Amino acid sequence: MTDKQDDPLENARDLGPPELVETLDELLRGAGGATSRVSTEKLSGSRVHRLRVDVDHHARSFIVKRFSRAHIAQRNQMVATRWLPAAGLADSVPALLGVAAERNGRRVWHIYEDLGDCMLACRDAGKDRRRIFRSDPERIESAVALIARIHALFAGHPLLAECRLYGDDFGSQFFVSAVNDAIRCLVALLARKDEGASAWTDLLCRLLAKMHELRRQQAERVNAVERFGGPETLLHGDLWPINVMVSADGGTRQARLIDWDHVGVGSVTYDLSTFLTHFPREDRQWILDLYLRCMSAFGIRFDPDTDWNLLFDTAEQSRLAVAIAWEALSALDHPADWAYEELALVEQWFELLEPILPVAAVTEVRL
Image (cartoon, rainbow, N blue to C red; front, side):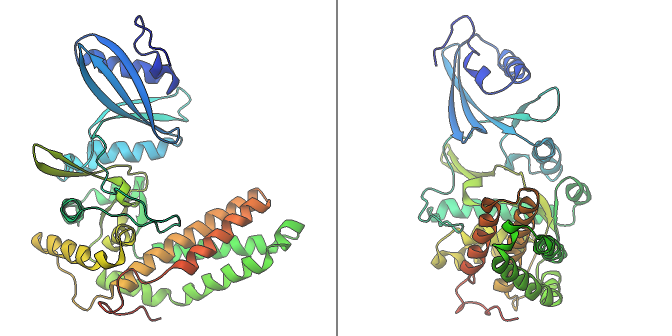
């Protein structure tokens, strides 16, 4: 793109509607000085961009993220401006500097401070759903300390009621509702008599049998979460290493979490299962032990007989059951092969499930 000196925000106009440009203009005017140049860099598909701005020969940068669903934008805004600050955790996320929305309310843009290129995950060593990332232990320690701090300070917090209302409910009944939703959707697909659904009958029957097997296990799994999963707390909900930033300003490491699109309330094991599964197997036990020590420092301790693999597996199975429900709904709305192929992919993910922690270190999952 060519920068226009008479309109330094020209490049930003490609990111969104006039409402976004006006918000950016107000933000830059509030910073003082004359803006001479604005450039953009795509970071994640078409949704996230880095905006570099020259103001009086000093460079500044911002992150602009587009939300296609207004309620997801609202969740992220409440995390940054209400929920975390209420627990003394405002420093756990990038500062939200501005919000813009289309007049019809369909899409919303957030403008955040730019933390730089400091993702915890530095290398992707796989191509399947369970991608493995590696990072140095000191950065992991900073990330784990922050995760534990959020979990501990929000345990029993009165705002959890509001977090559950505007976010997701990952409590002990999440497994039950996920499996039941998947069963209903699969039964509806099998009831269809069109040629497309008939060609995928075997797949649907296998998935339905898997869901019925999980339904038979629900009492034991729910009891385990309620007994051993710890207090309900605020959960990030999508705790991949790529959503953890660890910067080193002045030699001091500071971790922060980004992309709270799936924020919710429930057992810490929901977040931990996502976080641990994306690290090499040989690192998972010491990462969990570090987390437990951090929680203990806040006065929250877990039963030494906890079957962590069972709790983690319950979270994983719940997520896959939700995926079945959504893909089955998509197949009901769009009865084409591609919709059923997505269900076949979920079946492959089930086949790839394995205990997150080495079985020699913990009690093996047996149901």
